[in-house]
Image (cartoon, rainbow, N blue to C red):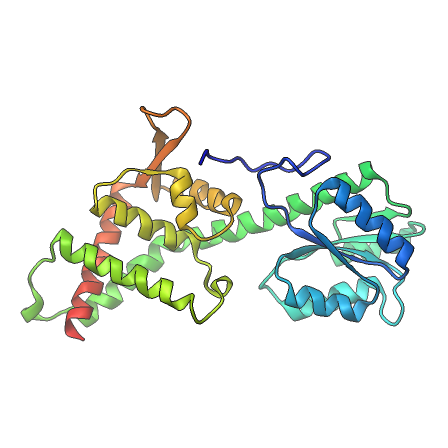
Length: 298
């Protein structure tokens, strides 16, 4: 599989290799709902629609693919801005939502409220293709930016977390009777046990609860190193168990942070190869040695 690039659609999203976030349309009247969903269909965004704020809150909380909410400002019972605040209260920091507010007329007061809410745009009815496309691109960019910041924060602590894990395991594993240095075969068996246990977890719980692409990438590249295998970027992205665009961003962040190294495949110019840096490989080996020692004690 060729390496895919992160692209935001300029107008129609059908041909983009990126998995775009799903859009929920919240409109008080059926004709408006139908028109909005028609525009989204033309632009190639996955979408769904509801006609009440209560149903919208329930839908967003249950459907984790929804990240953009296009909402009518004047919803009955609960207005669109209050609805967005309620959604964010329920989701907390677990998931980002990019609101786009739809109104009959933009006023200074409404603009200030939307700015305070963190809406990415305010659109006037009726929606047209060009303004809708621009607003959705801004929403996608906003979500990508938040995700990148979260990844950077996570990676900034990754090395120290790994060192603490190794130290904790070593403190449990010190024993003169276990002084033998494990072989590559020992470490490969330990790694297979770790990977198998993580796969078993997916049988009982949703994989979305434990999405950890950086760790999955490190485990897969450690396995490849122990087995003297070359690994392509697309292959390690599949092992990350997240959408390709998300995995590629993690690969980029981890490469920039010095955890991974990436180079063109001399035998196949269509792909890049990837591996652990020497420092990361050393940390992973220490980690596996510590886990191996603990498992021998069990």
